[in-house]
Amino acid sequence: MIELNGSYGEGGGQIIRTALVLSAITGKSFRLYNIRANRPNPGLSYQHLKCIDAVSQLTDAKVEGDELRSNKINFNPKITPSGHIDIDIGTAGSTMLLIQSIMPMIPSAKKPIKVKVIGGTDVKWSPPFDYIKNVKLPILEKMGYKDNIKLIRRGYYPEGGGKIIFKGKPTSLNKLKLEEFGHIEKIGGVSHSGGLPKHVVKRQTKSLKRSLKSSDEIDASSVDIKIKNESEFNTAGKGSGIVVWAKGSKGSIKGGSALGEPGKAAERVGKEAAKNLINEVQKKGAVDRFCGDQLIPFIYLKKDSKYTVTEITSHTKTNIKIANDFLDDESEIKIEKNNSGCFSIHHKK
Image (cartoon, rainbow, N blue to C red; front, side):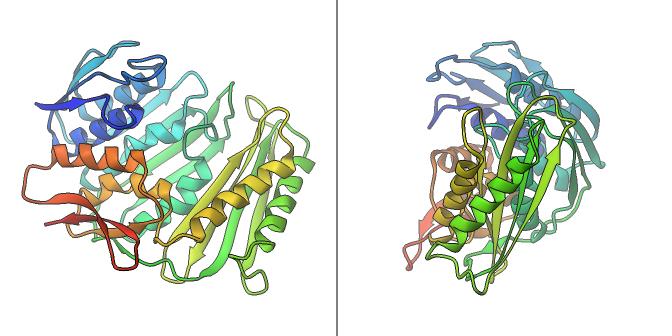
């Protein structure tokens, strides 16, 4: 049984999610202790329990310690991942973080996996739905990864109530090789709102475009900017946000986003999303700092994969540590600095 310290690095829920998915992939059991030890409310939260429940159902795992505020768990998967499950997080807990605990299982699954999840689709401290769909998945497709994620209903904080359907088929993966971004070829995005006047998304989009076009990093005369406006009224609560992405000439994608909240002007949401994207495209690296940590469980599956990233975050270091704890051969996932001063993440043989 692999022993993992839950207080490592930022000591957050990322350790739990990464350990779960790598356990499912490898069939190795683990014991995780000191769970979220440095957080204001240490131990397992309700959302973490839902992630454990989802992976447990797909692997018929034996689990000990899966209780609210528990500071340790033992997880022992019994079967190769497969099945169809429904998970209701019950709050605005992130559906996207739960899906992160499942996506890397897909290539080596026994049969296709289908998951329906109810919760938050666009909430703080987690990747928004449109980032996963339009940034992460297109990058994974370069490895031959095959899945489909569908938005049925958006869910905002605090009501949640959003719904997604995720499907994936087993497949053989290629090595991931993304070392340059190149120049920006085009920019896309989604400006969305729920339960709010339609002018909110239009104002967000207008502010976003204005900020992008005034940036020195983007040649507004040659870059096509297309932002889709989505106003919905069937959401459980009120909310808004933008996800924007830039496609590079070397085949990669970088993203940025911002969320609305009470008292926050729509113009500010658009400006923040533009700033976050500009911050990524002005730095060297094929992928943005968020994708930088999310890709690690996938390159775990394929030796000699390598990509460069705009920034090495605490989540990145944590994911690498957990991934290497699960490796039992002579390979290793490492952070390297190349001659251009850019950081790369490499699964070396």
